[in-house]
Length: 436
Image (cartoon, rainbow, N blue to C red; front, side, top):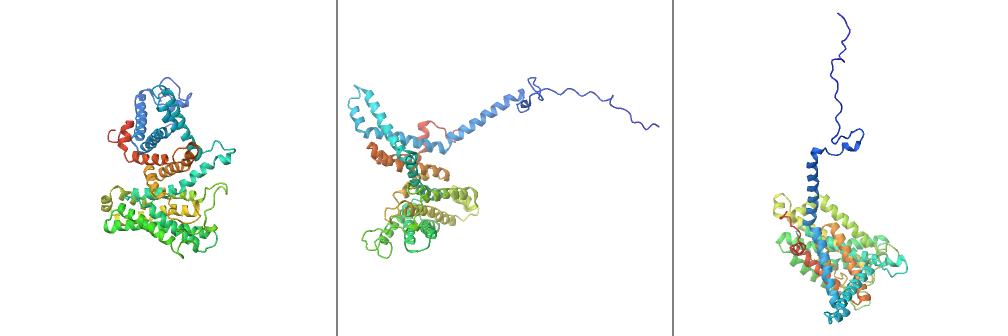
């Protein structure tokens, strides 16, 4: 029997030629053709792409971010109308509108352009400055004003996410400023330790003051709105009493309700030198944004905050201690507002503690949180916007003679439109989530 193996090569069928891609294009000759869909699948791929774009557009038009942007736009438009009718030249041209309407529109354009150009020069860049270093000074002022607004807005927004309406920012800032000033004046710690201790004292004071509202909510069910409003008044008069007593906060030998200036070691250093007023407080506000973002989106505690804010009954059923969550969130929220108070006393106005150290920030923080939709990054953007309003409002009044109250009106209108999303959607014919 032979050991030779039979040759089977002749019995195997010939391999067919490799099929070409649709359209007659050789895949070897055109590597890019391997990634393109065949012709018979083209009618499936295109509708999917169109559906993806439709999903993106729908998420934008039905989301809250677009409503916030349009609310700012509407407020600016209404503010422009008020600028027109408060300008003397516009009112004069309106008296002969039907004979020469062009004068009215020309004067209106000049008034509006002048106002918002002055706002830009006072908040972003002074185009009339002789050099770049002087030109960017308005931007540093915007960032300086934005620091405490961001910190306080985070405190209000964090409470919002847990279903708590923290409108006691003023009282928390006043107590925090008083505690920071007291530690800065009396602690006598060396070097940077004094600044650290004063900042922490302000955060602790603000946290404790807000925690009272959280504790009463958890134990007795007392509504935090009423409690925080009352705590605003109590905090004001407590600070006034401390500033009126020698040995507490009142400056030695003075009869005015004001403390002495902060020691040099307790003053927040300026970031860009003595030429600019921007200080460390703005960086601390940025750190607070990052911490709150991580807390809400990456921590178990933040998950409990959001769960209680969405539905406290469901959260309780899931095993979350709702009362304890109320207390903890108000402690953290108050400490953030307290950081804003320490920012004011140790950075922006280190000349001494007074009863008006909050400068309206406690209530402006509510607007910042609403405009930012209680999201840390949104609060950052809203704080920068309101910081620009504060910095540029004085320039509008000084260079164009426009009342600074116009800026307050714009801020109030932002709150109005933010509080009425259906109105904004109706004006711009935006769809709702239910409609799509």
